[in-house]
Image 1 (cartoon, rainbow, N blue to C red):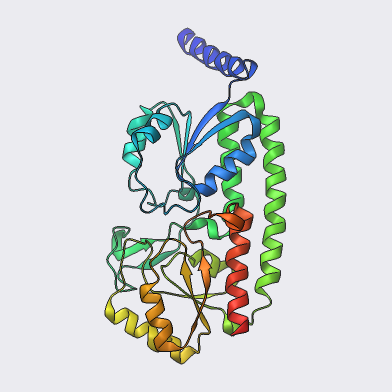
Image 2 (cartoon, helix red, strand yellow):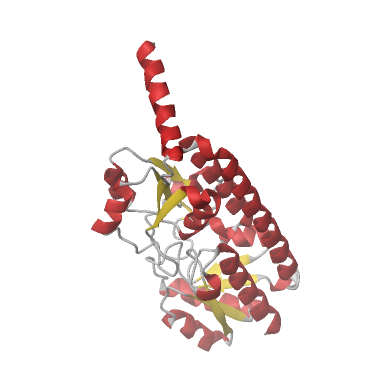
Length: 304
């Protein structure tokens, strides 16, 4: 019992010393959305190694030796979760068990789809041939919950700065409330019978659930899967029948098949979306990425 009390005292003392010395809590993140959240909530108390940069496809990212060194120095490792990171074992090995792991998306309910629904094979399938959509951040409600999760994790690791973490989180949550209000007003410009979203790969299920869109995807849940000829043919027929006005490219994908579909259906290219996290330019923040995607979708579908 005496030893247990001593260990608890030394741990608490180390936390106070860390704060008193002005040392920052080191965080490694492989999610552009998680990176923004922890920077906003942690503020001056965190030093964040953003391993996946905006505009980079997280499905294709592989950690470099330099990345693994940064992970080995971290007290907290943030990932998207929901089986997004197929390299997670490498990252965990690099921490040597010293860092807390927070798989943010694993704390939200998942939208699932049947294996092979879009004619592709995916390694992201569970029991019963169901696969999990890992793109949880396209729901602002999920982003709010992620903010609270990160806040609580930072408080656990650095209780001395709890007040700042809570204040920063409250300010960021207020911004997310404003963003969600803006999205609802923007989507309301589009009649419900026109909310049919055809994209390169299936990354917008959470957006569709929250704002009443029906999704058709050329490819599957990841950019590594390819659509079958049969699926493309069926999709072309459906686009013609439903008089879909526009289909959308994605910033990390080859537009070849999408361009073929537009030729055969008469639908136009509605613009480029950011499906897998933050992008560049006006989409380099979470608010900017969401506004870019929603504006691109709504403006293209209502103007066709």
